[in-house]
Length: 461
Picture (cartoon, rainbow, N blue to C red):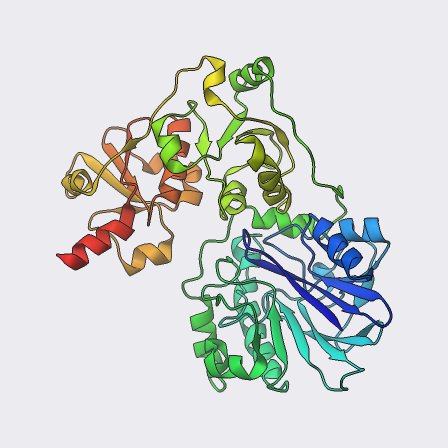
């Protein structure tokens, strides 16, 4: 048996290529959209990708199954569980509980594991030349290392009311059935630490059924369904705005993108025309560089591992945008964006000073100045972290407006007061400050060091 774990750290998303080397056949589970990684692995290991599978209709990334099928001719095997409202709306081989997929000398048995979503399935793998007992289980967003998938996304992100309590109950039942699997079976989940698909995912890439029964909180509620549901639904992070679009695009027919697009640097004339017409500018430089000088009305989303997530919060799928990035960063940024279906890139620029536009600077303040605004009636302190972070600890008198919800809550900002924003360590605050500036709030101070410095200082004192 050939096995490779492919991990996209930018979305904390795992996919898998499993092959039978004797027969030269392979299956890919939960493929990312830039599919060249799987083609390369298969080619280097004399394997042909003959099967493609998904664990569920994903909300956090645009699955590349159809791109991979288009290029390889492999068959797609997708869930037909969950009822008529949870069906894929394009041709595929439908899977039900206890169905089996044969890949050479390997067998993957389908387990219906609803909870995160109604159609969610897991794949129990048996490597027959070695043993007739199962050796691995691929759980998607059902069981993670240290956590289980959240059941509230359909309601909070996709707007399907009344689904989170039902999903939580299904998750409890699925966990009880899952605990009956042999404890030695290796567990390979769909996500790791940093994913918004759970609240306490571990950083270790895999586990075993037995280890999760010992250490995963979800397996400690054997006779307490109500306690399980209460804990599961409490304190889940805000689901990114783009999740609703992913749910839709992963379910219906859509345009395929079988290669990573190549975008050219935008000419001065074209850029100035687009800029004057209000095209969105996403500045991917560091927050420190952005603070020193940036194009007015541009939005700072740093090109780090969180780039795609915050782009999904901020960008409109129907509108084009321009990137500010160095030449050697562009391909990486395009890959990150295409993984969540943000394909509407007009182009990029590498030098913001090439257009004769006067730069703006961000007003970054230190801890002493920040402290001077606390309890000042003429100041409005806004904490742009998530609700659960704010509830665990915050500066007295601060208001909580999550960065991802700022544009929907502009009326809560008081332009007659000195607005002072902060987050944990500055990344979200620079997004917030640039969004506010784009919407006319130019007099905003940013305590960029944020709660990380504040709590360290207060702990010392």
